[in-house]
Length: 96
Image 1 (tube, helix red, strand yellow):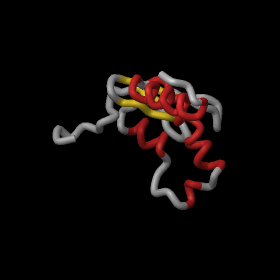
Image 2: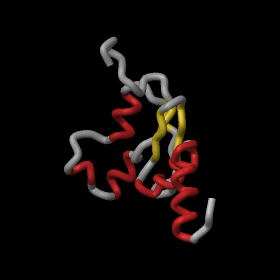
Image 3: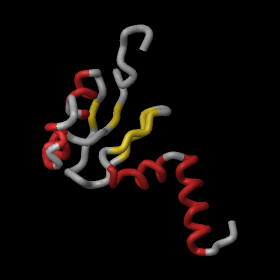
């Protein structure tokens, strides 16, 4: 940010864990490990077991641990909740 601080400084969040990235051998092609860099930038990381859904909301910041966390993030966010509701209505033929 313009004040020299990181956006994630002082925030709670989650990301791919270092061990998830190592499992996928992503450390060979990625320039850094997300969990490590977010931690260095001042974020308090909240993680679940590898490859399980996890979302964390801190103010307007919504983070998900991995690709399995998309629906979890959407359910936690009011707009995402509405999108899931509408999607479900379309799939089931329900009138809202």
